[in-house]
Length: 281
Image (cartoon, rainbow, N blue to C red):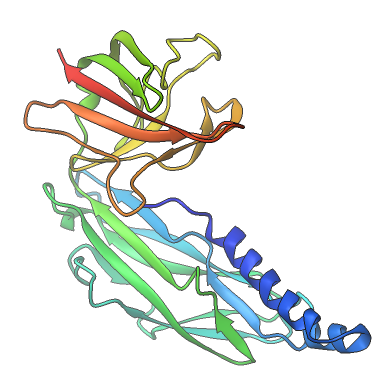
């Protein structure tokens, strides 16, 4: 479920490609090279979490595929994007999901900036114990000279049928920082802010309401795997809070219902890692 903004990096990648072209030419040649570059398309976000805990029928969800740039920045002709299911997917068509359009293509219209990829979520087909994943690959583009962004070529959709219960308890909270600072935050609960989405009362060494109206951080619980997506510190400061495990969970709930959250906070002098231990009372 990790954590990078694909559009930003796709634009950076496109900029780097353009810079290489400009370095090799001058004047009108450089402008012509920029104007002749390929169109770039890709998913604007590479992950999605869909949580349902009862059968309310099929729900249609949409995921944007963006026109990210190229040429003069205007899409002069329609682009047809071909996609496929990655063999590493664990979700099954007809069980967790169905395609709205079975053609295997999505089209961004001429002059458009994006197209929506629609999917039917079978809310009664989600596993109540284990999350499953649909991985979609963007394979090719037809209709004009165009490429798939290397950073936007895949979408991972996680289907979650197990509902978190962490907000039903209170916890003794201890925060340990990588420079050795340890803070006993006392007893705290968790707040449920959305499906399988929770918010703490404290962050790192800062206690309840100490430097902001809300001193918590937000994380998700996917069947016991805990993840912290990038967020501003306490939704107030520009410091970034991110989970430390880019390839997996930032914490796990054990058999007793206890858990730890591992994350870092950026500072001008460099990031500091924090591990917050939550012991169920």
